[in-house]
Length: 435
Image (cartoon, rainbow, N blue to C red; front, top):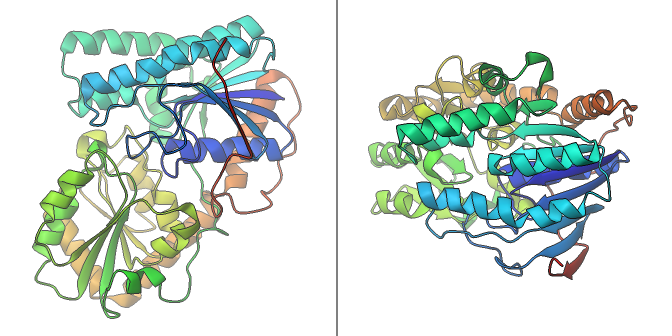
């Protein structure tokens, strides 16, 4: 089957939607599908176009059998509400010529990855012209997040944005998302339940696993052997509620047996560093290469996953999969009834969002109980092995695509090698201007 994947983020980005979109495309190719991708140059989570790529030029890559067309876009160095909207709109407009080029190819399915919904009209138009089926996969409800997190505040703009969103959502043949709660939100926005699909993010447990030894990062960071390490690794952005971790570190600074490690980049990183100034129990790392991810995750005795209360139903943190697979204990901040709470409540410790005191108590309790940490980590590992398999998600996707297009499923097979252990690099690169 010919499948066009259309989304803002893609490899070689190491975190967020780009990581999963690239792995999805790779898995579909390995199952025998012909896959093309339209995306932007890599810029996330640094909000800076990666070295070797251009903000202003079109470009073609081939990565692991996937043909990739990259459209230019404007990347603001400090994203805010209006700047973020212009950023998304710039990609939606610049990618239109690349969409037009795919008409002659005639894909059987056009899959849009949200964010960004600004690309939905183009995706739907291409599907209509070519007779393809249109699939929307939601990694993040960007309209809800923009208003609920205060990035945009106009009530009139909210009414218009939600009306457009509902109108667009109902035009897709399938709408999928990464948690059951996010799927139900699509239904609440007017999508027919029969058109929805639960398509969770995954983790290859052959790639992320308990090392059974001390991580090399402990020595690199100068952390004493008897310390309990609390790790946050991932994007450091507005939706994470990351300031709660700085407050927890400050509350525990007198404990010389607990160390905090913050690894990642993002728009809120400078603020986090500033909040932690003078705290001797905090260490910082930039985003690490994918080849070092398992070593990094294994430095943790406790993984922490903060979340703002007003973002609880809007996102399902992609970093959770690796945390669970690593076999270390997980503390997540989530409300009952949310997707994050559902995933962690029986496989970790859950405390209320933005409740620093509860987080501090949970960290202190686990730091004092090695056996409890081991039991919780083992439960998370079992959950990752049974519920977060890439093959399970691929089978769901492949079967639904076959039903959607009236074809046969490809007979999805296990991925032959870990998806994330080696960096995804271009096999061939071509620079070109759109004619």
